[in-house]
Length: 544
Image (cartoon, rainbow, N blue to C red; front, side, top):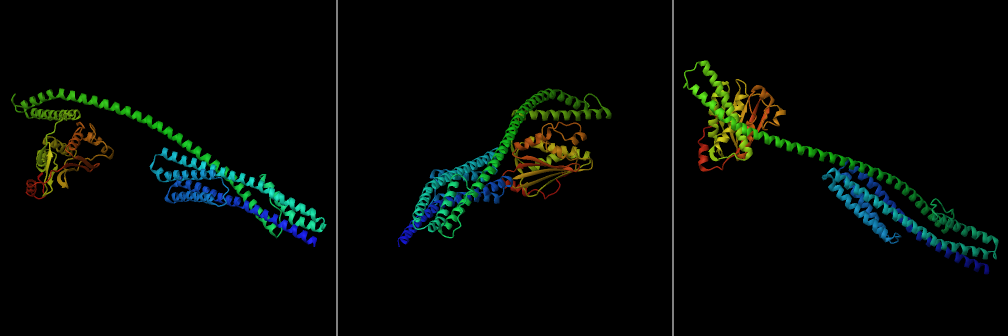
C-alpha cells in the first residue's frame, strides 16, 4: 500500500513537472511562429528585389503592379507580426521596422509614378534612394531578428531552470524509488528522466548557438510529442538561420554592386554635364561673335548702300540722256550697249534698295503705312507688269482668283508689292524657256492665300532649310543666274510676317517650286461682299 501511495505521489509529481515542461514548449512556440512570419517578410523582400529590377530594366505596368504588391505584402507581414497576441518582439524594433517600410513604400511610389518624367540624373537619385531605404529596412529586419534570438536565448535560459528543476525532482524521486526497487528506479529513469535530459541537453546546445542540436526522444507519450515539437522548432530555427545568412550575404553583395553601378553612372552623368556646360559656353561665345560679325556686316551694308546710291543715280541719268538721244543719235549697236548698261545699273539700284531696306529694318526705322485694299487688284497689277518678261522668255504666265470671295486686306501697298514682285521675278528667272508660272488667289477661312507655282529648277532638300536666310542663295540657282543678293526671300518673309502673315513653300529639285503667301483678310462688309460677287468666275486674269 505504501509502495502504491509512493508511486502515486511520484506519478503526480512527475506529471506536474511534465506539465511545466509542456508550458515551456508552449512559451517557446511563439518564437517559432514569429520566425515563420519574418521568413514571409524575407520572401516578400526577395520578390520586391526581383520585380524592382525588372521595372528598372524593362518598365511596364505589370512590373509596376508587382512592385506595389510586394511592398503591400511586406507591410501586411509587419503588421501581422505586430498584431500577434504572443508577439515577443520589442515595440521599438517593430516601430522602426514599420516606419522604414512606410518610407520604402513612399519612395517606391514616387519612383514608380514620377521617375519616368524626370531627367536621367534625378531618375538615378530616386532609384539610389529606393535601394538605400531597402537596405535600411533589411537592416532593421535583421536587428529585429537578432533581438528575437536574444529573447529566445534568454527565455531558454529562464525555462532551463524549470527543466533542470524537473530533472532534479525526478532524480530525487529516483533516489526514493531505491527503497521500492531498482527495477522501478531504472524504469522511471528511462521512461521519464532520459527524454528530459535529452531535451535539456538540446536546449543548452541551442542556447549556445548550435542550431543543429536535436533532442533524441522517441517515446510515444507526451514526452515524445514534446521532443518532436522541440525538434521541429529547432529544425525551423536552423533552416531559417542558414537561409537568413545566405540571403544577407547575397543581398549585401547585390546592393553593393548596384550602388557601385549607380556611382559609376553618376560619374558619367557629371562628366557629360561638364561637357555640355563647356559646349554651351563655346556656343554662346560663337553666337556672340556671329552677332558682332552680323552687326559689322549690317554697318558696312548701310555705308556701302548710301555711298553707291548717288553714283548709280548719276549713271541712270546718263543712260536716260543717251537713250533719249539728247546727246545725238545712236546706232542700233550703241543703243543696245546702253540698254544693257541700264539693265545692269537697274539691278544694282535694286540691290542697293534691298540693302537699304535691310538696314532700316534691322535698325527699326522701316516705316509701314497700312491701307485697306483689295488684294485681287494688287496681284492683277503685279502680274500685268511681268507679262513682258514672261513673253520674252516664252513662258506661260497666268493669274486666277477664286470667285465669290472678298479679298480686302490691310497692307502697305509698296511693301506687299515687293513681296509678290520678288516671288514672281524668281519664278520667271529660274523657269526654263517654254515653262509655266501660275499665280492663284484663294481664301481659307480668315486667310487669303496667294500661290505662285512654277515649273522651274526647284530647290534641293539641303538648301530648303536655309532658303529664307539672309544672303543665302541655293546652289543650283547661283549656277543658273550668277548675279543675285540672296536678300529677296528674306525680305519677302519678313514683310509678310510684319503684315501678320507668312511665306511658305514646297519644292522638288528639277520639277519646280510653289511659294504661298498667307495674309489675314479684313472682316467681310456689305461693300466687300458686293465687290466679291461682282468678280468674274474663275478664269485667267492675265496670261502670256
